Image 1 (cartoon, protein in one colour):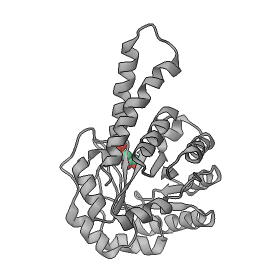
Image 2 (spheres, protein in one colour):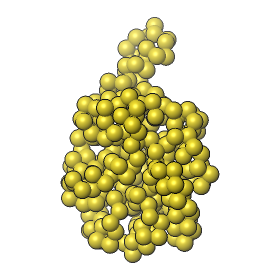
Image 3 (cartoon, protein in one colour):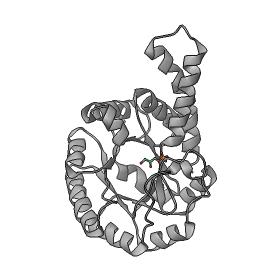
Length: 274
Ligand code: 13P
């Protein structure tokens, strides 16, 4: 199937009352597992290259890996740059064949976030691809704390930048290893009352699966980013694989055993999006 843009998968999700999973990729095995899970569920999927992934593998390589998987898949696959921190990084991703970029200006003052995000939106749209922005700041477990999204600022941000998707801070936190008490639904309602754009939840691992499903069906939340939950599944599978045979040294043989458990974990994530 031709590679899909973020807009092409989020607009139907918004209309039909489900969400699309933005899955954090670190290597070929997890990317393959995510696409296999999406095909099993007959659901679109967003493959995401975040800062950790880019530190390990060059962007042109990641672009080629994502595009290869998208073209071979029987479901829509988006190649997404997650947390691009500079306009140049987003430009490079566009040149490397990504079909969606996130410009993360969420640590910057509002006016600067709007100006820089709008510039990336223009670049992305000129290339026929999508752009996600962030308003408010989604913090990190045992790290930087969050700054909740202000609904009026969100409305201003959405209109001024023309982003295709808008990440919000409504009780979500990155890198949670267990379920939290959940998101601030009243705040989500206030934001969606003044914005038309599909909303994105980063830090999806901490959101209870039942709440993900409820919010996907009943609100404008159309994308949940999930990383930690799947990285934990990979880590467990890798330890089991190594422990299963102390003689084995071939990397491909060891890693092959991780694909099925990660696929099963990704299937559960995709099932919580509807
Ligand atoms: P988690 O790792 O907390 O699921 O968050 C993923 C994410 O938001 C990537 O942008």
